[in-house]
Structures are given as C-alpha cells and as structure tokens.
Image 1 (cartoon, rainbow, N blue to C red):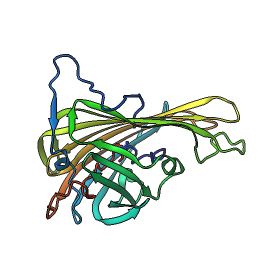
Image 2 (cartoon, rainbow, N blue to C red; image 1 turned 135 degrees about the vertical axis):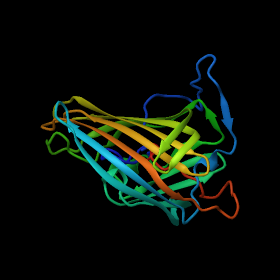
Image 3 (cartoon, helix red, strand yellow; image 1 turned 90 degrees about the vertical axis):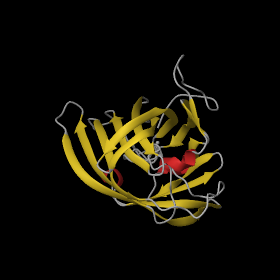
Image 4 (cartoon, rainbow, N blue to C red; image 1 turned 180 degrees about the vertical axis):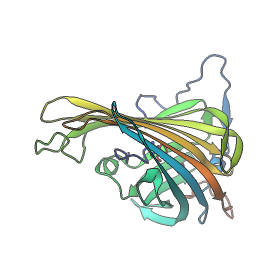
Length: 283
C-alpha cells in the first residue's frame, strides 16, 4: 500500500498503498479458534476488464500536530483504460482522475495465477521507482494471512529533508494482511462478505545533517466486494516533524458511489486482468 510520501497509492500501494513487519512466505495470523477460509476464485474480487469504471466520493482530513484539522471533499473516477508494456511485461492500466485529492494518476498492475503485482505509476516518485515491481495480493486468498511486500534499506529518498545540501537516505518496509470479511454500506449500496485487507508501511528517513532518523507510518484498510472490486478504503498517515516542518496527520476515506464493471470474454489466469485498486495499499 510506495508512491507515498505524498499520500495515495502505497499500498500500492497500495496499498495504498504499507506495512512493516517480516512475515516469511504466507504466514497465517489466525488466533486459536478464529475462522479460516480459502477463496479459490479471489480474482473475482478485483475485476479490471477494460472499460470498467468506478466513481468514488472522498474526504481528506489533514492537520499539523496539535492544530485544528481541515476537511476537504473530493471526487475520484477510476477507469480501466487499456494495457501497456512496462519492464517487458503487459500490464493493465488504471486511470484515476483524483485519487486522494492529488490529481490524475495512471497505475500499472499485472495479474497472473499466483496474484497481482504492482508495476508503478505515472507520475511516480523516486522511492517507488527503486522498489517496483512488488506483489499486492496472493491467490488463492487465505483468510487470515499476511505477507511482506518489500524491505529495502538505504535507498535514495529523493529529497533533502534537513536542508544541508545532501539528499537523504531512507529505509522502507511494507506488508499486507487479509484480516477477514465484513458487511459494508456505501453510497453505491450494501455488500455482504466484503474482503477486508490492511496494508502497513513504515518509512524511516535518515537525516544527514543531524544524524538522526524520523519515521513516517501509513495504515490503509480496504474492502473489496465480489464482482465489484474496491468499495471503500480508509487511510491514516503520520508524518513526524523534520527540520522546520511541524509534522502532520492525514486521514483519507473513499467510498463507492457507482460502478460499471465490464465482464471479460474469458478468464485468463495469466493475463493482466485483475487488480488491487489501492490502495494496496496501493492505493
């Protein structure tokens, strides 16, 4: 859930869209007595036939630490616009008109028999370009389960945070957890048994001037309905003070208002036809 430092898409990303802790392979998070389930046709929760279209209404709350928050409403339309070749593979292109109230973005995803892989976005960020591609979801979907998306140390942050003339380095790690199923109500309707996923990201920036580190966190929770895709996500970002910056907290919510989901002519398990919107985190 990384194209975020500026909010939206680390979970890849998605998930937007995330996470932070090491889970080798597909480690189950089930507690004793918790219900377990394996969804063999998990791709049906992430439809992405070309021409499909989703409209979301969103809300951003942002405030400096210890200050009064401001709230902004916005709209975002997500469309499967076609396919493209990235890094030698065919990917599905999702165009979002205003994700997280940050303007238009194209994002690239590849689906095969074992899951969905994120191949970046345009415009992207320096951090994102150093860690793509990375996996968003694994098939079949085990509930509950978790896996680490990436864990990279000492990458170029792409900015001079502390103003000493040297671009700072960063460590970034992320994970995705499938936590369960919920009933979710949004403006487009009510959906039972929506898959709930949580993406977490930790970004540790090493300031070259003071030799100290600051940590940014991003937690995104998303719900996906069978045959519809993403119906809702919420995101909580915390940026600590760095240099003269006072730090800030941002909370983002998007809910589905309407969807026009096209049906592919045939399901091709090796084709680029399914995607985690977000989230995913990334989003």
